[in-house]
Length: 89
Image (cartoon, rainbow, N blue to C red):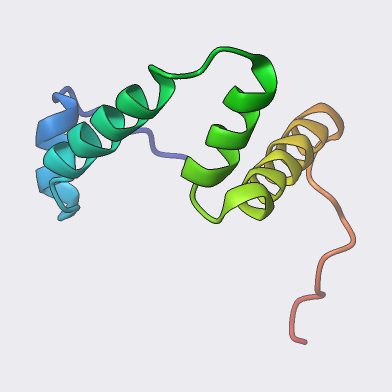
């Protein structure tokens, strides 16, 4: 049996309903810091260095995110893997 439920609400209402924290102020501060840091950028090497420093977990975090996205795209193209754990294991 398959049941679909549609809920019409704003992102703010969904955040509250699911009990997620309000990170609007933290996000605004993060964006402000990035904007201020980028004002002095004059070439691509400098921009890349700032991006590495500002990204969560630096270069490792960017690589993990890239691997996650590539895996998700591959899974979407080929379908879910059938090599998972067997039932009852």
